[in-house]
Amino acid sequence: MKIRVATPADAERIAEIYGPYVENTAITFEYKAPDASEMAKRIAKTLETYPYLVAEDDDGIVRGYTYAGRFRVREAYDHCVEMSLYVDSDYRKSGIGRALYAEIEKLLLMQNIYVVYANVTFTNDKEDTHVTDDSIKFHKKLGYELIGKHADCGYKFGNWYGVCWLEKNLSERPEVVEPFIPFPRIKEKL
Image (cartoon, rainbow, N blue to C red; front, side):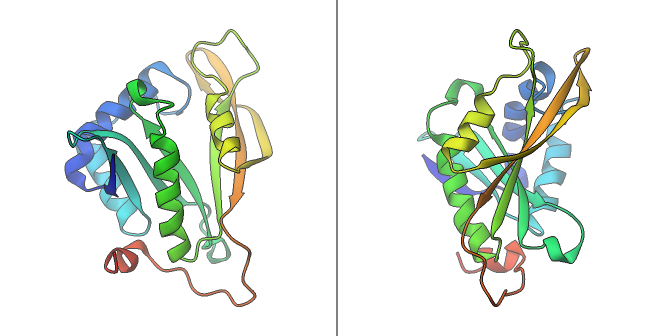
């Protein structure tokens, strides 16, 4: 497996991975799966500020991706990000997600990011076929802690879903905080 920075050329494959999550799950609250053109725009926009990584198998086929996004708009939040991760359904529980997060966390530290958040869908209905607690378990295994919930805030497939926030500290907070460094400046050094 090879992990590298995504490019807009990866958009078609990323749309293929993401589409079933939109169409068949409540993991994302989007109703309509974005096409390759929209995904290319999203990739390019993210890379203006944050890392966007893909994991390729030995045949060069993208099997998963992760990216960071702005947590909140005020400058005081510049040292925190929200994480997203999607893995080809045939490759879930293969270690790709763990490897992607490990790599992106290194890059985020280089940007002077100290805290990462994951916003994960949950349901109280154990019979629900559109969401499981696998993502919560995954994040907890990687050192994320549950810090809060919003109950019944998203409506999809005729059901109400909640989201929980998980947090991970990437390092101790420094006494002297260096400014946030946009990803393009980090990418130049890679």
